[in-house]
Image (cartoon, rainbow over all chains, first blue to last red; front, side, top):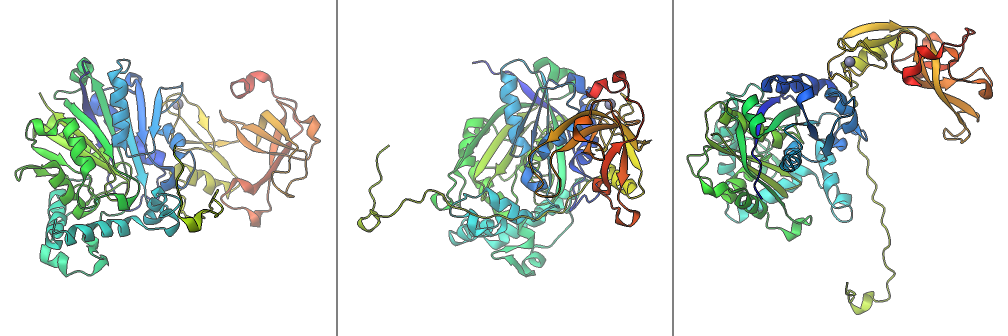
Length: 353
Length: 173
Ligand SMILES: [Zn+2]
């Protein structure tokens, strides 16, 4: 089957912060929906399909994702869908729909306010309801188990992990949307107390409220709406078993497989935006993807500098696309993850022409 | 599917047919700017909606955006304390335990000056006399009990005006 060319043509994100206490989700999204449409030079009448990614568990309100559609304006009725996943998977759904030929322009948004609840407990609700769910194992504790497994296997060291934190915050200094940034010294980071051993605070992404919007366009529409579209040359996602004991947590088989199927290895990439909410996860991902030393990894600072849950993966796609559209990169890979300890992974290869 | 063969000592065991795992999560709800302004005005016994700058519809309670146009609704409009019943139902099931004597009437009320209705209780009138187009007014709690919630309005009751013409509420009927 001849695949239809689809590109990211516009991207907008919020200024991420610990808590947007005044704004509800609709109010948080509206300005960046306008910004993303303006970036493509279109009104909402040009959008054939809207797909969003969010989780009602964050807001603690059933069907809050339906309410949030008011930010786009769903009346008269629009063609719309939603995934209870990071917005990167909403891109995947839209991309599949665009392959069927009826949709030329799609708008994808994702948002997450972690501030209303206790995000570590909230994320424990994605565990199986029989064995792990009742134990309320939280997301940081599970990541710490994974880090311990990697350290004991010799896959990386605590110094490697601290270097990831320092590099991310350094990179984020050029990202006005980041929540954390600055020059930090690896030795200073390592001198800090353990948080959830072996993780230090700097190994963990901050708790963030934020949102992002991406506009996708197919073929001629993409060329019309963007001087240099970021073409999706490959996109694939893979998942590992729910039972943590059934997985090797020190590697990421699903990332490696998704990268193979997305065609990552065909040519080198200039930029990799990796969705790693923990420092050791970036190290696992780099190895699974076999990235060369000269690849610019997370020039935005990555999820370690702003982690709006459900939007942080979509932001990786937007950040990678932005670098292609601006001419800074010719080929990039964006990665998104979901579930505990990198359970599910999506890879998207983007190219300029 | 093949049967699972259990160890000898479990063969007589009763199968587990269900488990209960309790979950409790606490949230601090953020109403947002639009709803905060509305609720703060309720404490002054005022009902304030917001007008869409594009289609000019007035929304109450405001959520800060127009669902038709997807634009912010920042123009505030004070609404009347009276409105028109655009739809109603007679409740014969005691959902609210003993709080409400059944049957009682829940109604959609289009406040004067608004383009969409709010939902509230109709009291001080026999349930079988409630009808579309009936004019009703808000009955507030005593001043010292009023807070930033629509529960500050105890219920709506007929205000004695003649029925509103169908034309005035047909978009919501
Ligand atoms: Zn409007």
